[in-house]
Length: 628
Image: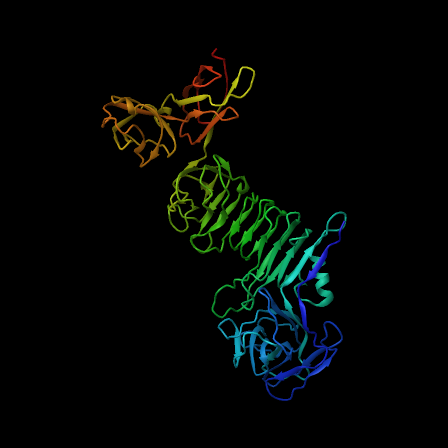
């Protein structure tokens, strides 16, 4: 039982309790005083009157260069009391000043009459850069790369009768680490962070209407210590600016034993109000499960305008929302029933990225019943990494706005694997409100793997057991079509126009469209050259052509009157005594075949199989008799 611990990373530079080492800039009388009027912590704040259409301020000189860590930002509290005379954000109405001295520094535009219309005290976080730019920074002379002075000022357009600029507290750091909250004690929460923050006016997490403003990082758990964190029914407003490092505002979840539970919480990015170059700031906030197996349980949590979300295998996010956000790295997290709307990922990227290692017939159930829509860029709904190279199933996903064309930016699905072939089963998926088909779901498999869509497949399954019910491994099972489904079914004794071989590869051209997919099995009969007559796994070249392996020395063409039928099952049972396949059946169709085990002990007698209609799925339990 350990109470939650909230540890700030920020260290004090100056609390502006006096005017010692504080100097004014901007001309005119210094007019600096240390008094209680604007004090937000401690006893005093340093203040100054800025009036008569002037731009003035003041800075504290630490006497030595600040040490700036990789993630460190300068935090400073500023107060503007006569807000009606502030100039605009673009014209440095309120600015943070950092540099070498009052004659060599950078003014960072942080607010103005058009962004802070009601004035008051506010903390600002700035990452020091010693140049001006279009991103609302104004250079005064040229400071060095390691500053030693910090403060701020106002640019006003009218008169103030009294002091109207106050500064109280300058620090450097990046945010908070939250640990413990375990056992019978209350879990850690956002209110606990805010309470600690407000006790020393850190400025990382502050109360706001309907929730909290976040400016900085929150590390929930550490390498050495777990954290149990629980909260509900609140909003986290991520205040982002061009004056921050990319992804400065982020929530990091560490330690395998950490447990984070959120219900009805929204993370909302509030971007820089006037980025001068017109672009969107990269510091939109992000969430990352640093330790993959940490337990993350979210219900009705929303990410709005934020950047990437990196999840882990211990993450379950039920009915959550990502609206205009960066990429979701799934890492086998469960986000079923969630909405991923108008993603902001770059062209040719995926709104969701999944790189799990797959084996045959992997069901990606973690994406069941999700809704995914395309944003402004021509991106994919799901990008599968190079480890996804075997059969997968996607169920109940609604795709909106993606391209039906193959191998283009914006194709619905993208695959990074560079070789081999795989089936993608789409079960009850829709495209722009219509049932998914292999014509309206675009697949980008240009990296090298051959991907075949199987839409709303039904499973044909055979379980082979002994008379006492024990599973039989390595029993050979064969099933083929026994009719043509009224003329619209899968191949049954379908006619060929040509059948030839070159280098051990037979090429069969059917008289009509065959309706088959790569990796399907067929049985070929009727060729005069016996080597063509076999059960084989095929590679589809076109709607009328497929190839399969034969002996390289057999004659060509095949001669005779070859025909072929589709085989849903051809192979050996696994350790569970099972063999199965999935297929979309265009019509009601029967099957016929057999089961036997005759090549290795123990031996079992052949049993004939018959299925009247395979179109709705087949699940056969077959008991074999010993062949003594």
